[in-house]
Length: 428
Image 1 (tube, rainbow, N blue to C red):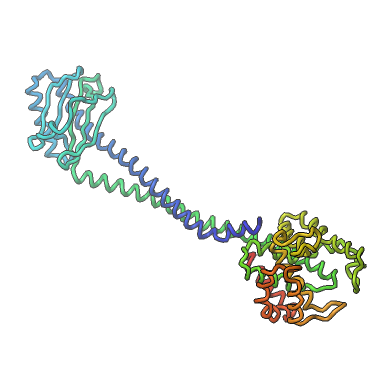
Image 2 (image 1 turned 45 degrees about the horizontal axis):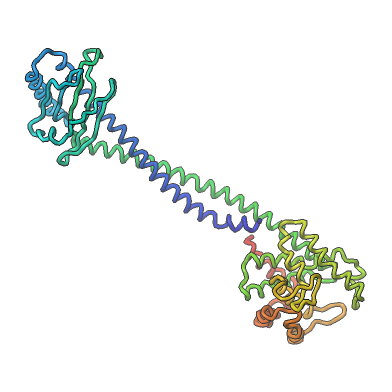
């Protein structure tokens, strides 16, 4: 679990940068789009407000008792006057009474095509106090088509309706476009700046988490070493035995191309393979001679004791394959369960070769260390019986190099090699 956490967190900074960048870009784009519509709507309202101000000037025409022809002339004069004074102006206008009957209309001569271009068959008269408008482009020129109620002087009762087409100048549109783009840029920039600010904070927090998790993992590995070394000392051995068998096993596993996760489990199992011997009596464990049948049966219980010990710790529990299977033999003659062939976990089959090789080439109270050739001959005699042939073949390709680089090294050198392996597979 801890290792999985480190694996997830180790690539976190790069993933965080990519994900924050992606989220930032998406959020910036979405915010920019939202800002575009909001600001466009606001500016549309502003343009409508400007047209409403001018349209309200026309309310006086409805309160005057004049003929439609005279109203038309006055509307035309109004349009001409405002067209000469403003960049944006009405190019056509029509007045309606409260019954929505037309009482006068006019259009600038150079915009006579406007009435034909706008569909007036279904006019949309808004409710009192509101303005209806529609943006349209006619002959490449943008216009606002608006309909609004007109009130009497000083905000009196409604006296009729105004319909007009309001021309928007290129200068106005350019200003609107610039305003919208500036707002979009500010919103998108603010989002990206926020994301950029979050990255170092989140990266720093991630660094603290990784450091804490690695510290916890180091503590677990130190406990692993202490347990393994304590058993080695009690078994008249040295710390180097656990380190050597672990190094042998890891190198064989690498040659067999098993996964890093399985190699980490193998390392744990190699360190703790004999942890159950803590429950075996000293008289049996330290006996210099051969054990009798009763003593050997007692010695065999160390496997189950070992499984019981590691079962109490979740982090150590995946060492069970080696702890429980390192005395099994591929022909089924091993213990404690008499497993055969592929029934034995691969890590246990790997460890069996490493453990026996180290035992043969190490000095014991009852024997001298065997030479490399003598040890290889003994292992070969166990092919298909004690040892998995595939594992033995992988070991044979490495045996000479492992003997020179590990078995003939000092305990201090082997310890340093073990530290390198732990760094490689546990990233601490």
